[in-house]
Image 1: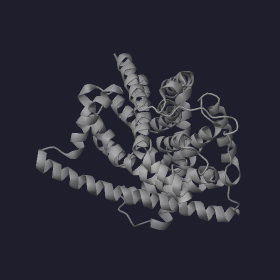
Image 2: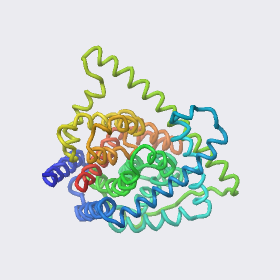
Image 3: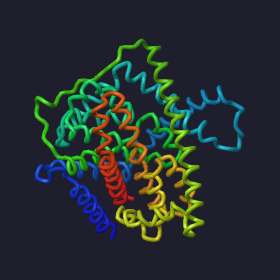
Image 4: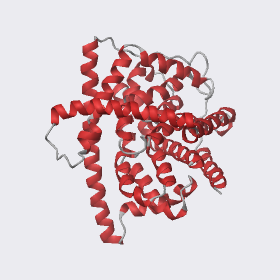
Length: 392
């Protein structure tokens, strides 16, 4: 039965992408099938093999060690501030982002990350039917984040046509940045975080190939990466502050969204006898069923999925932690994979603002296709969840 549901879910995702395609005659089906095959292989490998389990445990242990180092710094600055029996979200989940950001800065400074990103991007460009710039951007987005990645290609922004800019933005919204992986791993099972990263990377290319198909000539396929010349300690200071800014911004957004959703839930409850999130759950229930969630759990799962779309993944992960005990392990896994991306309404503003800060006109272009961008990135999340559901 789950194979039939998977095929139905796959058909719906592809149909929804096909309906808004810019040029259906230019869709390249071979790269789409190759990448779908790679998604199935990698997901099976990560979730259903002993070697995959060892890899995920190794990654989990690495991040646990890094978060331990981060806690040493947090304890030194904030020790004694919080109740020992409590788990202060900002201190335990968000502030470790600062340390992870520093590690990324060091790897960037010593040219380790640029080397990895360049050659992984080059390999991807051979199978995804897109250009080297698009491939670079997808890998770089998973390292630097959805706004920071545009800084590295800022010299090219003014020369990019609308269709290529859309693909770059879709990749940025479909992935998550390495600096907050540790934060996710404190909230959901690390194996779902790692699986989602791989699935979203290929999923972004698949959906972009359907919604936004085009050819890139050799003359246009140029990558000119902007790198700042800094001393080691200048870089450390910059990445420490960048990490802290991300932690504070995420904390502020959580404060605002959680409070707002709480108020809206109360208003809806008084008016309709049902919370706003539950109402959204009914809207998302069919999609939850199509990604493999048992029918009895579709409303509760759909509620969490919808919460992520209208707020952000952190708010939704907090809700998942509350309701996970009443859900099957399969449902928790599928929903977890769906949540690991930046596909939400606030990301439209974040990406538009990032591009606008570097190139005013291109920022306005991004704003004009903002809803279509979110539409595509959400389809990527649904596709990833459906594939995960096939192997759980």
